Amino acid sequence: MRTGTGGWQSVTAKDAVPVDRMVVALFGAEFQSINAAVGLKLVADVGHRGPFPVLEAAAIFHVPQSADLDVSLDRGIAIFRNEKKSGTALVHLRIREEVFEVTLHDAKSRLGVEVYGRHVPGPSHLGDAKKDDPVANVVFFALEGEVVISNGKHATRLQAPPGVASYLWDNMTRTAEVKQYDALPDSVKPMNEDERKQFAKLCQFALPLAEKPGAIDQTLRVALRSKDALERKVAVVALGALDDLPGLVQAMNDADHADVREEGILVLRHWLGRAPGQSVHLYNQLTTKQGYTPIQAKSLLHLCYGIDEAKRRQPTTYELLIQALNHSKIPMRELAHWHLIRLAPDGKSIPYDAAAAEPQRLQAIEAWRRYIPEGELPKKK
Figure 1: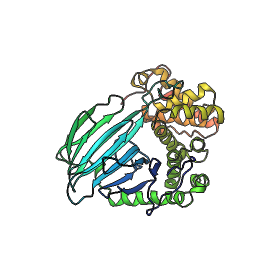
Figure 2: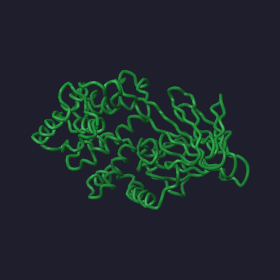
Figure 3: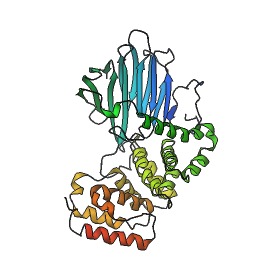
Figure 4: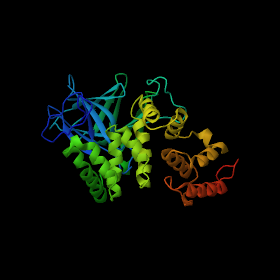
């Protein structure tokens, strides 16, 4: 939980969660409304089972006025369940300045909600933090029983499959789209035994952060050097979740662990998509603390946002990405390679390490230029 001074403190099972404070779940946490009518589970999808990579969950709880539970879901996955013996349970759910009234119809009702933000490809808006507004995608899915979702203008009834089970919304169009399912998709089914063990291991690695909240920085720096790849992954995700931007940039400069740098890209893109103004914070961090020129910082943001469809059809895009494999900054080199192997998957066979010495990087560049000659696009099979 974020403290009033901007730090973090742990919340135990015996604690009442203070209102109007950000609570971050690394990587799962369960809550109950004051009147015990609604249960809430916050969970992350670190294994990427769902449509979006939601790496942590965070929420702010408010004093309920006319509902059983009043909560702002900032990011991640929330699972609401009606815990009354009979009758409906009401949740006021706030997402990106929109208030949804969620009615859990009866004791069988269970609703999953996933919030994920991402910038659309294109230039950054650094002059006005309010214009630096990522797209927030929200998925409501009826897991069991019936649920009614209302935004004050329209009410939509969902029911677990078979039936109209999902409700999609985003903060740009602010319109809803519903979808019918014959059965629960794999992404929302309960974890299997292997997944449960993996998730338990993730939570176990995160436990020291709760046990020693005053030493979070030191704990994460040690975990980044762990011999266990999963522990290193947890550390990178936690850096983003807890807004340790200097630590996250440091992780992306890790010369010893390519997996840390690659996870850093995913976490940074996720961090940028959380709320308006994140790009401005990153730009200022890069230019004032990390030795980036304004052009370099804007280029990194551009790569974090992604490459639009039109640019993907232009040979110049590939020439610039290949050239960036020898950029002076490790994160820029890693981002360039990250995009290249997704736009041209056959290039995965070309050995490349963003932290390798320059002669090895130049050899990789020559191989990429043979694979995608200047003025051409990647060959399609």
